[in-house]
Length: 186
Image (cartoon, rainbow, N blue to C red):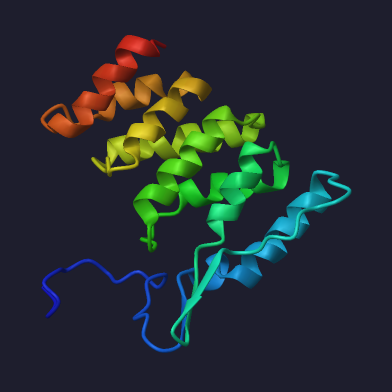
């Protein structure tokens, strides 16, 4: 156990947030620059002629500036039907690392994806991600929206795997399993 009281690996996406400029975006793949670059690549791949310019929300006060997660803007673009944003949103819910505001951002992403037109490949990725979380016993706060997203895309061929591997002694997982069994029968 670490000195901070937990034995979990610290997420690289959560910083110390001191100083005059506070960037709540992640690092690497989830930094503002990397997300913009991926967005433009996906926009080109999907044939979007006029891709959006993604800009994170900012707040400045008393000599400090806060840069909020760019995924908020991506969620808005998902709701507008932007195929490139839908791809980034799918990647975001596949991510295991923790993020600042992660619970609400992942919930909102799943909610937006539920209303979006997903490709067959994206539906399969969503299906695989959510079922694998259940099999691992990992049903965090955002799972309420994940189960609704899974209802939309369907459990499909993964029912047998889920049924055989679900931990029936885990009451939290079984709550979602029973819900899916009732409303999304294979």
